[in-house]
Amino acid sequence: MTDPVTNLAFPHNWQARILPARPLILPPRHFVYPREAEEVERGALELMIRADANAPEFLATCALGFLSPIVPTGIFSCPNPSELCAVSGGYAYLIDTTAPEQFTMLPYRPVLEVRPVADMNLLLFVGHHSILAWGANGLAWESERLSSEGVTIESFDGPTLRGRGWDMMSDRETTFQIDMRTGSRV
Image (cartoon, rainbow, N blue to C red; front, side):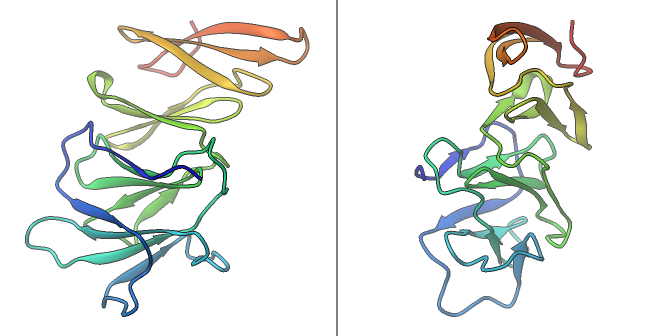
């Protein structure tokens, strides 16, 4: 697993710090993501989060997805200044810091890359086959299947995302372009 990253590309109201381990004494407010995780402590990303300067801190325990250096781990600001994105071994959790019982676990298992696109107000999540975009109001769009295995973002040109992916039927890399306003292929 890689060292956790912190990317605060978007303005945010919260404060968070990544803990090296779970505290021996748990704080009064402790949330586990996802709620039904078994053995969540093993390798989990532990965060102390404060929604704003006047709010009490809470502990967020984010279950580990994969123990691999190719998947991200860390915290990211989101287009919504009250949301925090925590990624633990490729499992991505979007947490409402003002109501931490409210969260979304992204369906990509694993997320292979997290890419903020501040000028489009989107946080992009790259999976093996497609891309998911998270905006200020939640899920903005999800692309169609772009690859049989492995999506690579190459560049942004205004609202157009350019990338490539491997096509199993032709056994070669193919290119694609996505309109980042809609998630549609252009």
